[in-house]
Length: 475
Image 1 (cartoon, rainbow, N blue to C red):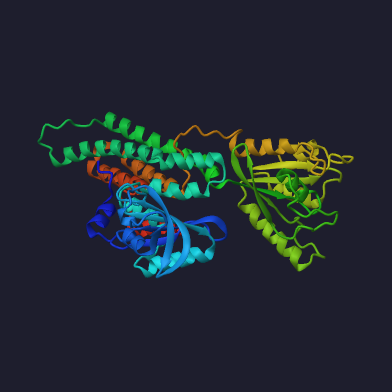
Image 2: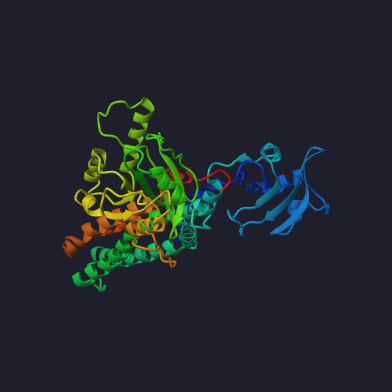
């Protein structure tokens, strides 16, 4: 099976990469260094025109590959910056093209001046993700590996980095290719029996057909089932703290973060908008959202800002992976409490009875009359049982401590949807069996092509453009 897509072959045949791209590949702002990167056939020529060695008279085009050289970037006779220039020759580079990286001082002025100069000399400004796009189209990496690059850049925990690195190494791609190979083998038997009925070709039996197709389906279903885990590894889980005003929601958020992030006062309605922060709990990235206190519909004496805060709180509740419903244990249950408890009975939620450092007027048994959720008793102010809250969050979202042993997992919604579509095609193929071989062959081929979109072997150019436009410029 060919591992280079038709689009890759088409690009290579058209030779559209006869231009040279350039971009600043480090974050804009002040820093120790900043990098201007060039890739393409003019990279070395442009470097020859603008670089003056500090210890050598050789030009960059004479430098050995993977060597760095000290010198200056010149615009005419004017020195723009003191730099370290690195030469990397095709094909053993990130893009499989000639690449030059200029390490400048990390200020916006020298970086901008160097970038403007290389563009003046014949390069053009790179589009978002164009370096990685060229790496894919030139066959150095497949599409799943290319998507892993942006996941590595955006990784927020050690585990999310490990998952992205496994995908970059080709773990997911290898699994998809093996499944496609199995489907190709089944398809070849079916199509051979259709095209050459008179030939002595080993015929695939109904039993063998369903067994082999079932094995491929099981492997795809296992990958599909890993998405919930992968989604948390990649993007984290949204945990929303909710409850009526002045029950200690902001105090709970501050206690979990270990810092004073939300404003806390004895006055109700202090939090007027949603406040979001991220923490790591047992290896998972958790986005904690503190919301404005909820009031009963139609309640009077609310100012416009507080009303807007309540609207936003209700909106963010809808997209939460987990709710932390805070109740003031030093007071009897209010109408707002009961109203909220009834609403969350079918949601993934933890009920937190706060202020146990004060005399209690609520018991867990009383709360359970309205919602059968996990209940914890805490004091956010005294930081009592905060660790138990974090442990229960981990249990509710992940089922305990998150572990990643290098297995293939889905982290991309694009991959999940493609696998779902492939499974639907295989379901259609299995249902009639071999009674209608032409239709079965059509469904299996559709599954093969759909899976090929994950690795880029059957990708359309417009979809490719949509993927890479999410990358940053310079990568």
